[in-house]
Image (cartoon, rainbow, N blue to C red; front, side, top):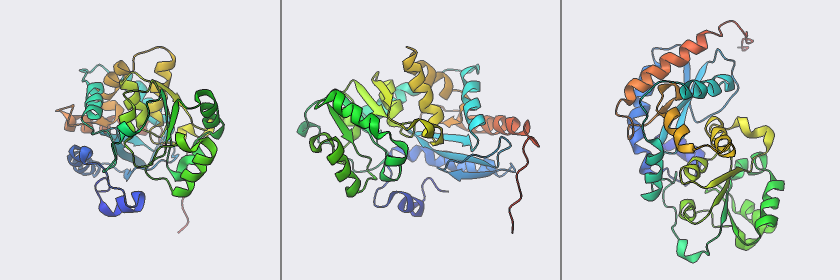
Amino acid sequence: MEMFNAKTDKERLGPLKKSKAIEHLREVEIYYLKCMKKYNTETSYDVIAGEIPYFKTLNYTEYAGNFTIQPLNIQLRLQQFRDAEVDDVEILDYAEFLRTSIKNKMANKYQDREDKGETFEKVGHIVVLPGSNKLKERTCLNKLMWIRDTHDTDVYFKPHPITTHAFIGEMKDLLGEKRVLPRDVDLYQFFEDVHTVYTTHISESCIYAAVLGKDIEPIDVWNMIDRGSFYCFNRNLFRIQAEGGVPDEWINKVFSSPRSGVINPAVNKNWKDSVDEYLEYIHKERKKYKNWYIESKKKK
């Protein structure tokens, strides 16, 4: 088990600790790993890779309080969402679960976020930055400077909790010292007042902003957007808003389908059936591509 493994968390997060808001997913991880024993594929936690359609690995992680499962193949990751969109299932209210998480201060992925809302002036825009390991690789600095110049003092840039002081110093030099928030401040306290959230395809802040009816806009480097574990979620949220659609409708329809790989006991009382159905579905799709592509055997 990796989702609630203290050693794994320390390696990935350093001194940060995951929020207890995802505790309801513990039983899902246990059941999922048990079910995977009947399949000839592997499982991994919170990674991304480009395997062939006849994939070797199913990846799982947490996304906005949900347990998510996806193959390490972009074609099938996209397909499972398209199949979920047309699946005939009972519609559950995942969007309301997300709004309630924000209201009850359960949206943060990490513990001990500081709520200092009264000490900051209200602004109309906020930029959600990734951590140091992704900041320069995934984020378009030209877009950040455009936001700085366009909104002047009406914008905050929020560093990820996993951001070094050196990077924060660089951001302050580039974007303005007063515009860059402390890294440990609670991001979601600002969501009530802003009307635009600039974020990435690797941040769950995208879906929280969407269900609150905020304008959302990406700050990613274009040729990197499909390399994030949340790409298949967030690309649809950005697309739906651009097309004038309603994010709640897409979220509830897709997340309610077992084919999406989204599992949440807090919303779906039949979540075990959804795990079973998803694993049968995705392995059936995998089988269609057997022998399409032959990978080289690794040298011993």
